[in-house]
Image (tube, rainbow, N blue to C red; front, top):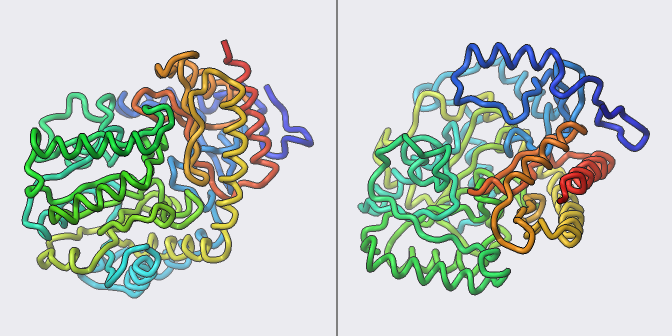
Length: 447
């Protein structure tokens, strides 16, 4: 067990991990919940703040998962918490389209102004990332009068019917849940790692395959939308070359399709700008947001060109809960945090993690690549001398880190990528502490 020291100001492991209280709760969970709801880290949280979580046994960990990209502004951010409490004391629900309220309108105005989309922009609020995907497809089909959808290898867009169909990873997200939604076509994503780091070769190959698919898989004129993550999340934090995204923009312009950027994971400051799109130089028609938009409150948004969104007939989109007033107020506090300087912190965290990850990759021939955009960083583990995924090494690194006070989560279709979604309020001391734990885990698991 590892006790806190002068250098380790946050991590404090006082029992076995998981501790006895967490073990007992895990037994109750196994009896009461479906087996499908397995636990990545079977430590039961008692409280959390900033970039740390403390479990029911009194163990404190540094959190690199952030609720899977939800806590970019940190756990129990004071302004977010205050906004939630204040709104809960006023009213908690009416359904905006039945009895509306100002905070919804003001949030949409702020989101409209924040995105790098030209012209008149509008926003519709929803609950989850998967809902934004479902609705983006609905909106695109109505706006274009077409039905086809192009998605990409390695994509993750959610687990509802259309979102699951668009998602690339078969196990555990798709297997056994068919039949899937029709008129969906999967094209290659431009992954430079597959081309020895040659980004332009990756782009040219992917775009050539997309063009070929218009001869063998679908008619280009039948495509309603192309939906793509500008930086892939679950797929492994893959940053494509700008030429690939520009090629998708050109494809949509040529064939009258809608270009949808899914920024559920890459948005809300994760990459050092509010939207990753801002750094990529390509303008989509729609941007999807969820996860960190409201710091754990249930909220998501489809933001985009008014001429597209306004094609939907009255009541064609919506629902009972979208734009809940408590979630809207939380989102205002999140946007305030970015405007008050947290984006600068996000950039700094990204720079320091990049330097550390690049150094780790240079030292270990089992790390195939260090990559990412801003603080959306990842290490891809491959069997030494090959490009074959090494998920066992990642599992070992993750387990070692957990035992020493760092919570991480893997990604990639091969389960061989460590991804970082740390709350961006992490302190310098916590960042160095957690990087030391990671380095030790990598060294301990090196063959």
